[in-house]
Structures are given as C-alpha cells and as structure tokens.
Image 1 (cartoon, rainbow, N blue to C red):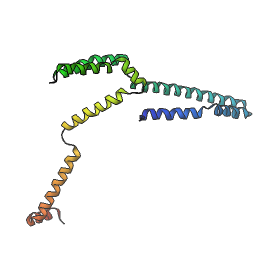
Image 2: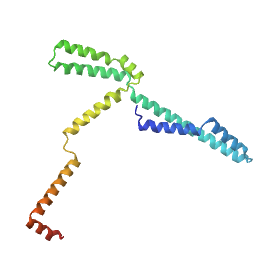
Image 3: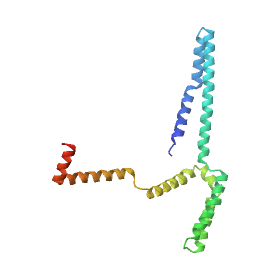
Image 4: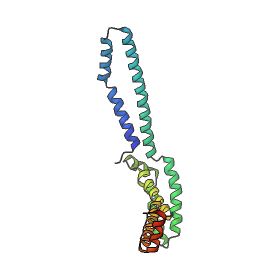
Length: 190
C-alpha cells in the first residue's frame, strides 16, 4: 500500500511529538528543574514545560484531525453511493440500449451491476480496506488524461527535436554546396 506524502508528514509529526513527551522525558525535565536552588528559575522552567505540553497537545489534536480528514477523503458516504447508483445505473442502461446485443443479455448485465453499487456492498468493501477513489477514480482520471493528451498537438520537446534535425540537415546541405558554404563563411567568418 502506498502512503501519501501528507500521511507520511503526519506520521513524522506524531513520532516527534511522542518522543518529546514520553512520561520519562517529562519526569526528567521536572526533576532537573526542581534540582535547581533558584525558585524563580524553577517556576519559569515549569511554566515553559506546561506551555510546551499545551503546544504539543494542540499539535496532536491537529494531527488527529488531519488523519481523520485523510480517512474521510478515502471513504464514500452513503449519500455518495446513493448518488452514484442513481447516476451510473441509468447511464449503464442507456449505454446498453445502444448495444446490438439481445435485450435479455442487457438486463442480466444491469442486474449484475446493481448489487455491486449498493450501499451495503460499498460499505463492506470499504471496511475491508477497498479504496474506491483510488481503485476507480484515479485510473479513470489517468485514462481521461491520456485520451485528452492524445488529441492535443504534439509535445513541445518533440517539436524542438524535429526543428533541431531540420537545422542539422540544413547545415549538411550548406556544407555540400561550395557556393553556399563560401557565402556562410563570408557572413559568419570561420
């Protein structure tokens, strides 16, 4: 399973906070502050420790919310599934109407697709770890991107390479013609 850079950054932040705030580490800092003979320094140090712990607690809350947002972004809600079902099934039925196959074959295909797009099936698959957005959405996005790019004008690097080859052919043609070569030398020098 590939982990996104956002989740990796969250994991690093979480690990850093966990290392800073181990019970032993906090206890050692408190003991070190108490060991000093200056009450003012001890109080300032304890205040700084409390502020650091509050700051880390806020960071942990932010990390937990970010993890939750990442999880929610991967799951389809019941409303999403219902919308997809209400949109895709009629679209499949319409596309099947253009097919030359027998109507009984069409109805079998449509009836086979409907249970796959039910809220219960999607929820079970998501509980098992299936990521619909990654499995279907990303490949579909890439497929559409390739289709669009195939219709776009040629890549700029291909155009540059073609122009460079034409320039080289022109140089060779000039080098083979003594009069053209003499004019080129007269213009540019050696």
